[in-house]
Length: 151
Image (cartoon, rainbow, N blue to C red; front, top):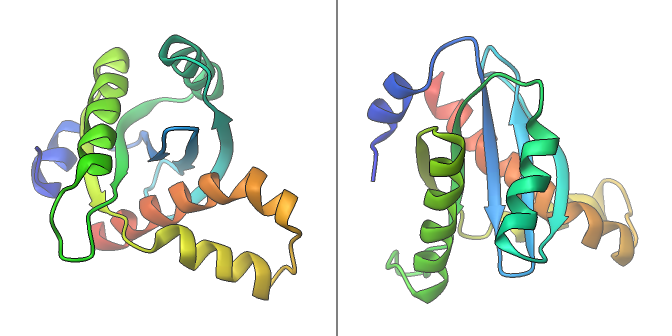
């Protein structure tokens, strides 16, 4: 597992970073600007098969110069890795290997809950709209956390 310093030295400046919120049913995808200041939600991919997931990601990222991936890592509340964190790590590493880019793992505890609170409070978003946008929003939240650490 790469440290943030190692990840940043492997991800070229002037590229975009891609945030991932990987679950068993969906993958939230977000992207940064090339200055690594702001994360923007792109899409929630509803998973069908791993090859389908890769095709969707390739389509979403086409034309973007990608420097690396930042994946949320759903640690348990005590900071330990459980089965879901191991699954997420495996999936993110496979995605990064497919694109031949480095991957950095960011603690994502409570990220979806934080994003959902904003969607309800600030935007009064319906349950259906939240479902469509929650994971992409969580990916942006995770990515923004790393972008803020970089500065």
